[in-house]
Length: 401
Image 1 (cartoon, rainbow, N blue to C red):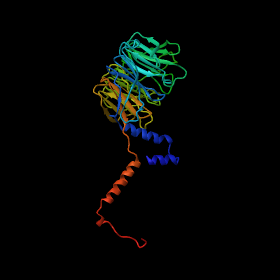
Image 2 (cartoon, rainbow, N blue to C red; image 1 turned 90 degrees about the vertical axis):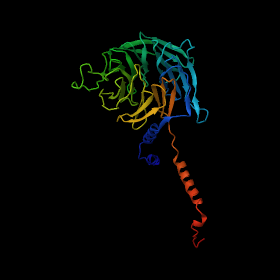
Image 3 (spheres, helix red, strand yellow; image 1 turned 135 degrees about the horizontal axis):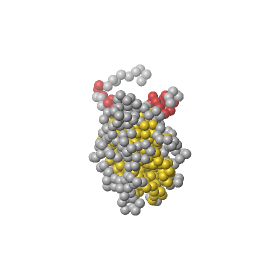
Image 4 (spheres, rainbow, N blue to C red; image 1 turned 45 degrees about the vertical axis):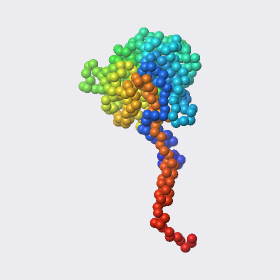
């Protein structure tokens, strides 16, 4: 660490190198924090969580009981042991509550005054955080599996919505209407994600084993259909042609820079794709257990070198190195299957929710400072000298004394 600081001070290093090195060390040291609890609000499994990017302070959660909760992650007590309190909830007693399971929740990217939720009650609601009442309601023909707002869009305010219907719906926040559909899938659309690099690029994953990349400005179909065999017809059977997985594709996640796209499927595989060319990078992550018939929410670290992927895997969260596929560790602490996890890039923390109705906080292990280690070493040395028998100490003195 001192070497990084010296190199930065001398101008030999990129200023971000120290930050990346420390972020990486913190991610590698993630452990379940016994001193931090998150209020237990949900009476059924937790399907989705989201941390707002403005302050990094408030977290949303949506459960299979239809309840939505907002938590304050800040520690005001000053004590090491504290509970992240639920600031407010849309509970079963509210007349605005979703009737069935909430599948996705997301903060509006530019303001914590608004968030969006979608549910198996065939609706998507745009909420006013202050009043906890829906400002806008969108209704669909089938269950809503996933929705997503672009984190960078300036020229549009579209929400992409994946439902039981194979058509992807685009809803406009400004007009409050459904303005466009994207056709191409043959099965229910389980996950949709906007690119964090280009505001008009959208990825979708479906039960038809396909992942498509769209430019929403084009009317002539998808830009790319990802092929796990990279077009090699000798390896693919006729059924497997142009498929991303050999099963339902239920998870999508772009890397922070938008250069790569990760997908997960019920074939127990995770794949890394070049988002520009659609090429399968053939990184082997091994078997990634995936039994979910719905959307699986997984996440990628940001600001680390190398980057890491956090994937729910049974009752654990598996941590993989993004570009090598190496399994770094398994985070164990839930009593039942984990359905969602979210990375907090400001503090390199991870939050996970599962069918045990708990949200767990995974926090980096604090490193004792070099100064403390040095003082401890000195204390040991002085303590060691004083314990020596005075008769055995060297009594020699110079003539100057």
